[in-house]
Image (tube, rainbow, N blue to C red; front, side, top):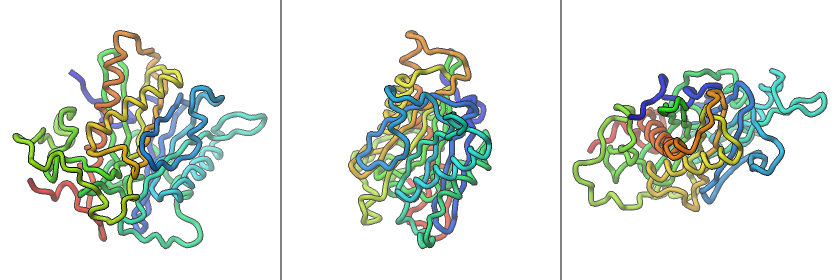
Length: 336
């Protein structure tokens, strides 16, 4: 029987801290994953409209083996500035890849589109994301808010407000897997227009309501609900995530971890990986457990990546809270 870690957050993976920062007027924010020591990382993009920074270096054939942090941000392409703020904060702390007498913080980043969510985007000459990235580093801790926080502050899905979600799983071999996700999908995370989450089979306890699946699937269960039916814009999407573990992995194995976590997207969102989503998962391995996953455990390990991600997606939407000028309702107000 699988169980969640003590916090049921990605920070149950030893060696990670998370920082959130948001601008409530803009209805957008930044979430930073800080690695206490440089961590092995990879990425898998399956959406058709990604926005990224420093992802090429994560390929197994490229030189840099480890990273210092990851940045997830709203703001579409403007949000890529968040990584500069994270770099500035880490450079002040003397953290980064050593080149001669210089240290270059390695901070890959991904963004989601939350520009049409009711927030005031008239921010002047420069967007706020660089400063939000810096502030998020200062706020980093093992405990952090989910729901309408950080990169999930202004997130939306088809028919419901999205949010920042996280979950963890402790495997029998002692390895921990954790997920962090900003859910801003074009598709829906619930079965039709009900309160039941697609991720229900993987729920541990009552972490996102404990409702299970409906006693009988509604006739509309397979209907393709789309966010742009409410927002009149097919581009306003993207779910970005991190799947992390304390196991010892190579860059290639971290890539496989990211690939497996995309299966969690498919079990929690319908539809997903569309041409109008920039769906992306970073795979991250701190190695803090000292455990290498062997052949006997490898299937359970990668399955846990998918199930933990599915749970994190549901938890992000479940925890979202209402704010002025919202374009979507929150899950807690939905009936049925």
